[in-house]
Image: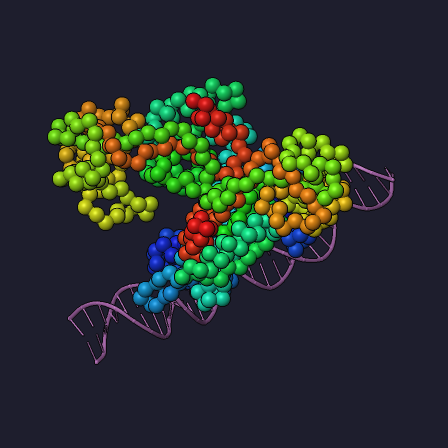
Length: 277
Length: 277
DNA sequence: CGGTATCGATACCCGTCGGGTATCGATACC
DNA sequence: GGTATCGATACCCGACGGGTATCGATACCG
């Protein structure tokens, strides 16, 4: 299945084999075996191009989930073994730079619990927490709806807040008490930047490409972009940026999320600490 | 992993090997390899007894989920291949005997859609739908909260209803207009029956053991048990049974549930038909 | 207290399957 | 039409999964 996912993502046997660290012929045969076992043509291949069939697309989705589940099983078991000897705690995934004070409060509240264990923070990029939770790199995560997808997890709401638009400090609109989405969307010369998708490629569009928040703030400060962020990011802003409340932006809900079958005491404790605080 | 789950469930290498259709020595070695690969003692074993360690319990939970995901991937791919040739539709799992008219309405509403495909009904026993959805035997399911666990699925609420208690027709309380849980719990000689758990064993307790609804109704009719059911089951009751509204029972919510990553048009259509009706 | 039965571990053997290299056959491109 | 690219095929090898026979430990019983 790992092999199939690699080929389906690359749509190229040679590159997929390289990525998997094996030669191309065994890969071809492995895919053939898989097709025979499932009784389905997964890939439409000519000697010049490879394309997914309908069943192939289904398998790609399902196989990704299955591989994540297998990896999660291995990782969580390894961590459980370490935890038994006191060498590991619980892994909390959070977006770097988001909900900082909420996170601090949560960690304090949990640390005060009687049977608290070590909390290993896993700071990740945009939308990566979901994956971390799925493949067992993390045990709990802070997500921001509607930006992150919480589908398939148990969640508990922590906070709902409105959003602000970030502008260069000297911008004509920086003094306004409120703005509407429509006004922001048509700001001349201040498009929303584009973030890389999970595979590292950027979506089509006209905004500048950014990779992290430092680049983002730099662009906004330079008057080349604007950005929309939750209100709670305001106190930690650089002073060359201005924040103007958005009147009609969808509210952002911060939730704590965990795999639905989680039975870990530490996760339960974190959730308790989070909802109590 | 299949091997480990078998041993963890049986807590006996010999029986597990038999269940897996292999000999005992290869099974021993397989478990050893797994333990070495994960760097964790999974089972505490003497020559007389086998017990799960802490990491072993974690792996048991995670491995079950992972195996379900793998099976789901295979099943859904096979069905997608059949669907491409028009030989298969979408599988809807429902509890036999529950929500019958709601189900009928749903099927009618969906069949009227322009691009409706065949709906294969999968009637299952108490609490089996969740499993069916997880391992790919079903694509959508009707669940009854709080009896069924919908954790990990996307759901849409269809109906909420109160519950009634089923009594033999001639019972002294059968004429009452309402009862409280406390009264039902202490009905002399009318305990709630026990249903088998997923492994086929019955929980400890004093109620009679039942395996299906026919047995259940028979017991109620004979004055050996009572039963609590959603109000909607009333119109289809045998006339030797009486139903009395329960005033303080938790309401039952019927939901339609599907795997969160499902991208199937047919599932979307069924959900649309269900929520519209 | 010794005999026995039970149960997991170990020793040894074998076939299959995953992986590698060399090469073919087809197709797009110059 | 020559060539380069790319997946499929042919052939070989080592490792791993599975089987049988047997050991070692422990609980049970007369």
